[in-house]
Image (cartoon, rainbow, N blue to C red; front, top):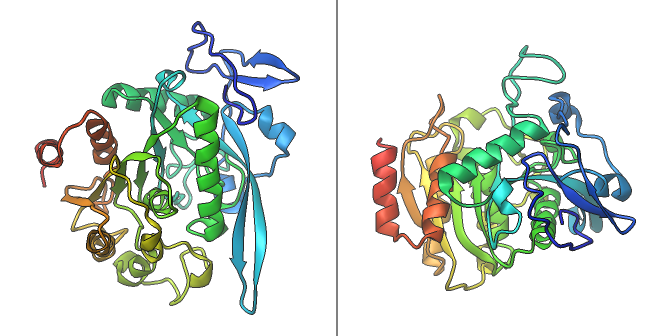
Length: 345
């Protein structure tokens, strides 16, 4: 069921948070209830080890993807292929559901001199069990199925987030991963929530021509990436013309540049959550994306709210609850009122 290549019938009894099903040699395999996997903090800076397709297929809640992308070099462009094993963490009720909220987390910044090579205060819930438990908590709070799809190099996904986050390569990888997760769980349409850099992934999906998105929440998102790099005070150290990874602009996927690729979809609704005091992703950049999208006939409801944390940056909770309310048919005005009530500025 959770392997991209094979569809199977769900057995109603197999609903444990730590259970998983995949096909191998034509037979069902069920992981023991005590299965766990720890995702070392060192992989955030060093890159996560690669896996073969066979290893990926034998990994709980993983999809093997091969995605084509255009590598824009200094002197010429070339076609490249990203082959990655991407992990995803579904709530129990995501299995057998008709749809789910797919969540993309932000960039992970490890705290200096914090923890060891496995654990770090900047890398929370870095194990399979912790992620499944978190997915179940989010699903219960929002009353809708929930899946965290881990970006490359994070939470067990292969790849190198220190080098390729925000890149065209990451964009192609995550778009293919979403298709694979949808196929694995049998969804026709999904809703998405992205926090910060994960908001950039939500922006990728929105601007890549998809017509399978119901409710989209951009939570303090890097959807106007180059403007954010230029206008966010905490990024003043970044060299002009480069991302925080050191990648040049030509290798980045900036959703702002692809707004013309958004396809009409009468069922889709888009929300943006912004704190004017956000110190990690400037309000200027977030508002630029919303204003330009609205001007192009892609309606976005921007809601100003209170971001959590010292940088006033965390609006993931608002995004998740809004996606759930959107799925229940709550109006934009009712959603804005709920945000103001629960997250007063």
